[in-house]
Image 1: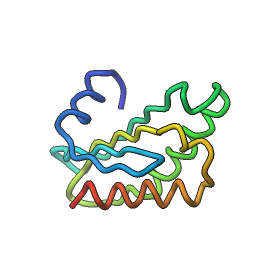
Image 2 (image 1 turned 90 degrees about the vertical axis):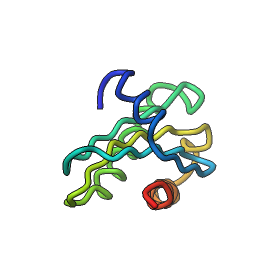
Image 3 (image 1 turned 45 degrees about the vertical axis):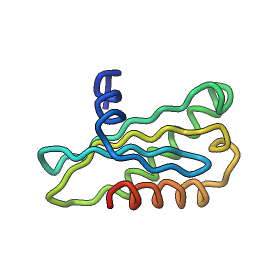
Image 4 (image 1 turned 120 degrees about the horizontal axis):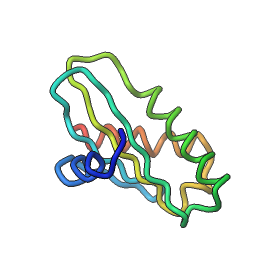
Length: 103
């Protein structure tokens, strides 16, 4: 996903789920297309830490994307503690949020 208008559309119209480390917004699309965007601000850390976290989030969301008749636009917003948790804990949080927001 690119552009602030797309992010705002998903964050404004989509469903939301939150843990202590991430907030996930989901909005259904018209076809089986999955798009994801990530918001990792400076509160998480310096540039190296933010990019590392973005790569982790991208890998987690890519593993969760499945072939289905319903596609989703996904925005994952990292909160301050996200940079300090392990990959497994971060993956758990994202999966929980995806399930919660999809139901």
